[in-house]
Length: 124
Image (tube, rainbow, N blue to C red; front, side, top):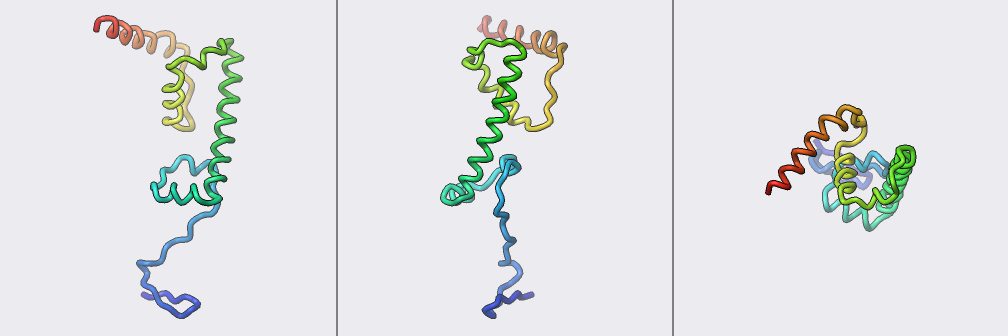
């Protein structure tokens, strides 16, 4: 099957490519892109739109995290702990819809696991 352009030239169906979306938003953060696409985006307006979307998402996440810290009465220097970075990264990798841990999970289940981990470090 051949498709014809307005200039009259024909092309096969295998060479027809779908039109790419020109809108960039938060949903784009959840899908990986090829390195060539990322490089092309850095050169155009799409990179600016993606940066703006990421800034807004980060702003919202930090605002909610800070509000939780104030509500829980955590000291401000808690954000300087080395263990916070991997925790935030793990939340991001899980994605939307993660339920917060229960009182039991934190007080019993994961406290026991952390105690075992600490004892293993002390033994070695």
